[in-house]
Length: 321
Length: 176
Image 1 (cartoon, rainbow over the protein chains, first blue to last red):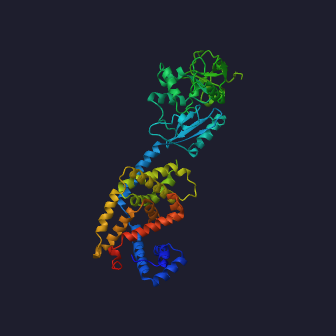
Image 2 (cartoon, each protein chain N blue to C red):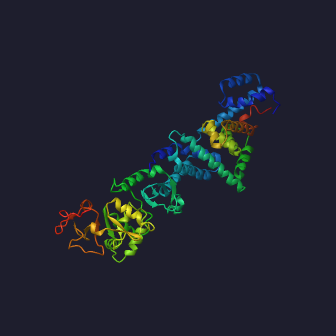
Image 3 (cartoon, one colour):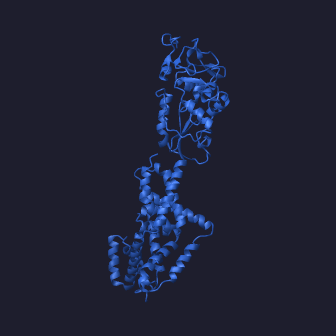
């Protein structure tokens, strides 16, 4: 290229900008004036205009449209896969300690007491195959609000959409389904639960299923206690937490050495398969070991659909509280 | 999860993000992967995006970032530009003032030059001249100022112009 005058060099940037429609009005006017006088710059200007025309053509060119459509299809498939893996969680403060709530696109899949620490690393979510956990309060906040209402005694049910993918086996699923049907304000024994599931000898296995319950409180495994009336295990030995949850529901408990136990004589009894509830002293119910369902109050027994026994008449002789 | 907003965003911008990446990367298979990755990243993050955010510029920024990572990884593997320079040589050699095919050839030549530009210039050029983003957004996507983004585009235009020296499209001026 021939050597340029200083004016041409100085104007070069504006010349390119003007040819490609990016220059401001004053700069464009200077360039137009200069181009009118200077033939080499006019040539340059025209070349840049040609390029601008080509670039405009590139803009309109539907480059590789069929590929784009295929790419879109593949994206939809991967998005569907991501949606199925994505789990939103948040750790919330509660009266029974930090609680993690996690949900997938199907529903809540984990409620977890985080005693070891509030980071994801101390959660069962951490390292799960086919799970991508993202912290997102917006997705879990509504559940937390309901949980707080429940813990404050202002709500008796948590009717949440559930994702049972963390349940370990069909047997566990059966145990949890049966547990979910235990009424609010009632307790049953592990043995009673195993019997209800149809595996009366699998008491320990039923207890294990509850130990791995991914949805405590929502699936009320705290309503299952030892046949002796002791609260037995809960969430890694934290029976005080179990006691608090039962107290919310009006189940009377008392501290007995290292464990809590229910106050059986202060509870109404419903024998297995019976449609009536009785006083604990009713001749028609067995004393220990605990069978059937125990209710903390007549209100709870009747809310669960049971009628007062026609023999012991708990409606006429309610238990003193 | 409410995905309607995200679906709308995909429908509105997938095509142009894909086209941007084809030109940015130069290989449709890699562009396909990166466009998917762009939207998967967007899906993970879009709920936390402020309401007033410019989602289009945001998607371009994700795609730009992925392109840069792609080439960083590629140059580590010492494969950078091998395929691209072959394309440039081929079209350069095919120049000549020969009638009807010229228009098409010029377009191909410009595309080839663009694909051979240094990465930042190419990304800035494509975002500005093909997709019409403003320099502020382009600067953010490239982690530089709007002024630097403008300079990248300017450099790109100059390179295209010089690469086309002697090409049929400039035939009437190139007799000097």
